[in-house]
Image (cartoon, rainbow, N blue to C red; front, side):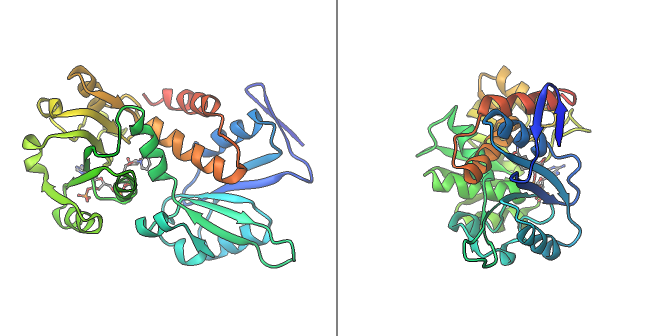
Length: 288
Ligand code: NAP
């Protein structure tokens, strides 16, 4: 079978290796287009498909039995997946969330082995490292949800000093406790200084792009500002940070690099970053 889209052609035959995204819902995901373009660019006989999943245990049994080689895991299953895999990468275990499965077929006919990884922290570190030396930097994270947790543990892996602030104090204090770092209330934001500020909340995301998590008069306290919101890419926070002279990192970069890390885990090959970035930029342009 041949599928043509935007002058790209994907050939599917009896030897095609299958990958997919497990979640509910998955119809909005940009990962199928990004990974299929990357596979195609490297001439790999792989295909990546959406796998809307209402029962995670059955879904995992399915991909195990059907010879899948890997999968992405998204909302709401990044935590529930941990007890269902055979091996969890140590950083993913510390974060308590897995977004990538690598499935190794066994030569002796035994059930395939599934390993779980987290590439969200790798994507965030790589994106911020383009603008800042992470080791020894002080980084303030706004947010205490799943993304903030992955980013916090990732920054600690890289030797950064982390601070946390969050709207819901109890949740923020809990994350700070897990990260063994200081928690500040949002009202204290104006007196905090750091090498970088990361917005790991959904504030500023479409359909409310007029919102920002940080008043612009505080932004000069940060050398770099990263926003993980990617819809729109040019958030109000990033526009105001750039106007304040901060180095800025957008959410597309984290999305791109977490996908690149998945691609590299699955194929053992360097990801075609330019191809993947072009796909994301093209798709996200419509909601900027
Ligand atoms: P989550 O677990 O639901 O956490 C949401 C966080 O946002 C919480 O800290 C929450 O604070 C905070 N928040 C939400 N609305 C707020 C408001 N009006 N004012 C202040 N704080 C608010 O979500 P998540 O999975 O961490 O994702 C967060 C955002 O990151 C989403 O927009 C998601 O699309 C984006 N994301 C981007 C990437 C990427 O690759 N670029 C990857 C993952 C996620 P409370 O604790 O007070 O509720």
